[in-house]
Amino acid sequence: MSKVPAAYQATRGSPLEVDTRFYDALTQRGAAGARHLVASHRVPVRQGLAWSVKAGQVFRVSIVEGAQVGDFNMWSLHDPRERMWASRTRQLQRAHVSTYDRLWSTLPFLRPMATIIDDTLAGYGVDGEGGRVHDLLGTRCDPYVNRLLTGEDFDFHCHSNLVRAVAPWGLTEFDVHDVLNIFQCTGLNDDDRYFMKACPARRGDYLEFFAEIDLLCALSCCPGGDLSVDLWGPGAKDPLQTCHPLGVEVFAIEKACLEGWVSPERAAYGGAHGRRDPSIDWAEVKRHGA
Image (cartoon, rainbow, N blue to C red; front, top):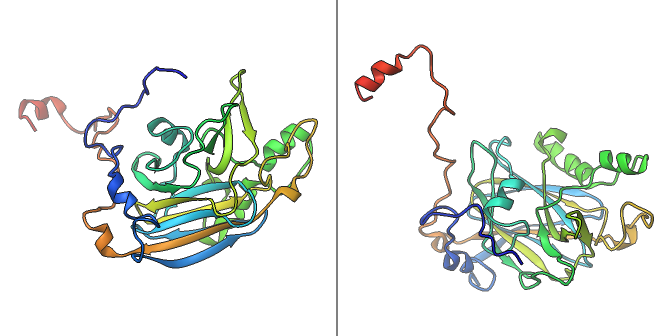
């Protein structure tokens, strides 16, 4: 393993520092009696679902039958221009996320949208082939790349599931973005190429998030199922037999447990990207110290 330090290092007091005791107290183990189920959903095989979560609530994505991968998108409930930024989250957190990692929003907002507070697969680590779970390296399967690789149209893809899921919320295909692949096991091979492995999750496994802001979430129940069957290449076939539904639950947290927590503001950058208003005499401004 490389000993080269991470490029993005947090200063003391930055939003990358996480109060682990606060988040631990919100989990099922830490908040017994202080969590109340307010919504429960099932995402059917090869379908998508969108739902809202209020700031200060917890939501869980779970395996309810057999192993299954889910492709996750997230937006600010009040402004869908602010959405989850997979690539920046990879840089600020890691390429495969788990407990205490945060999912960050796009510019110019750049704030934590949700914090992972519980993960039953946190102990999976790195397997013998370099695979890790909860992937931000790849993105959603889509009918366009399927056509590119096979020359055929196939409508069952995570991109399409997400497009259908968000349509009732007034969003379109252009709003669907790079995903968090929940329960997906991936890595880079010796040729530095992306690989996917069979999902290690089993019934009862879950990934749980604390909503830092009001959210619109969407989840695709991946048409690849547990990814044990190749989607493309010589051995590819329709993996319908490996597909299972996913569960989604939303929990309200008693106010006493949230004491001291404040929903994060958007990034405080106040510059103008080096631009200057030509109508202002900047030399005069400088002379007067304004």
